[in-house]
Length: 171
Image 1: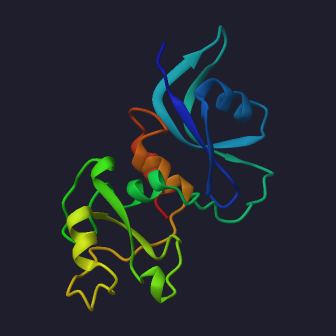
Image 2 (image 1 turned 135 degrees about the horizontal axis):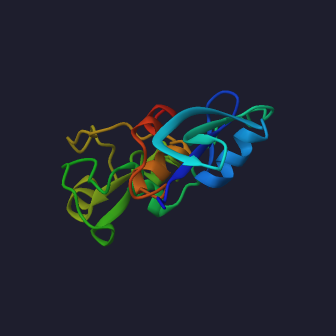
């Protein structure tokens, strides 16, 4: 059969997890979840046919707040799409470094909003200056991303996510 997975969201459509479609179908049949989007495929028993759910919403699950990604090197590089945030060159993880937008020597913290991916050349050129002082411009302002955004960018959800998942993953 097909290898489909189902995105599970809470009452406010915030992503929670990804399940095999069979488990998601069981959740909808037991009325613990509501199918919001379906795949084109159906599965049949002797007496009934069911659409395979692509996105299900848990019925009685209260939202747990926004789910932000953990601050890790891999997550920063994923957020920045493995691209130097100064020159725009895309490169391997090994060729990218962390750059403190506000240097640590000037009170800059190691956090989502002060760290960007930078190639060695740009990081060396910027040195112990702010981007403005070094005559450099950030391509994108660093932000603290939701875990779902990182997961979607990294492609962990599945090799071929359903297009409807984008409505729930990009927030």
